[in-house]
Amino acid sequence: MNEQLRAISELDRVIHEPGRLMIVALLWAVKECDFLYLLHETQMNKGNLSSHLARLEEAGYVEIEKTYRGKVPMTLLRLTRAGRRAFEEYRKGLKAAF
Amino acid sequence: MGRHKRYDNIDGTGEMGMGIMFLGFALLNYLQAVLPKDSTWRHGFANMLLFFGGVLLMLGLILWISRAIKKHITWPRTGYVAFRRGGKYYWKAIVVASIGGAGSVCLLVLAMRHDAMSLAEAVYLAMLVGAYAIFIYRFSREHPWKWLVLLFMVLGLFAMTLIFPGKMVESWQPAMFFVGLTWLVSGVATLYLYLRHTQPPTPEAE
Image (cartoon, rainbow over all chains, first blue to last red; front, top):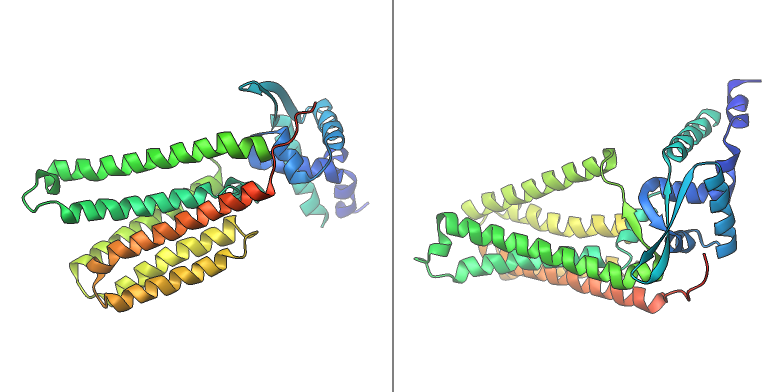
């Protein structure tokens, strides 16, 4: 198998899914954000976004914190160090593949 | 991945901040011009205190307005974001802004000392217009009407150079006031459009 094909086969499948890729790319660019921001930016529905976030949390890429802004509940999201590293590796992998 | 930069000005706070800054500088300049010649506020430490006190007040006002709009309007409607500090993009922006700011001050001083220096005047006015053009291109591309505001700004500044030909000192104050007001109105219009097109979501489980 040549180098480029190997790079494609080694891409992180958790991040590679388009919905999750959007989420990780958005989170990579910021320190933290809330659920509403991701909902607004990705234009996904709440169910889809929640399930993608659960998958990313399970992989250890995203940290989810339930908190309050005043009396309003707020879900804060941020990439973990592992998530940041995985996304940078993913970008490198894509560049190497193409 | 640069969307978050545009999101920061989704409510027009960036433009309003710039507008307040320009208006503040115009006001400080006006204050210095109307103070009596023998006033202690025109000389030495008191003059510096007036200037830096004014700048601090202005920055405080910008931060307070921006924070209040974000907290009570933007975050409940389209979400909260905390931006990353540090990294090469952040430092690049700081270096560019510092060079731009220092360049503007140097040009202004040069133009004031050599009255009727039309080249410096033209470059200075071009920088004022350029700042708005860069801002629209980088942070507000979804509002094409802002290019018309830019055209209005260019025509307004051009008219001022005709009213005060070659007189940098006389034209600087109204130019700053005009540019500041344009930025502020553009920011308020952005906020108005944002309010019209967004609604706070109904509370549900996330």
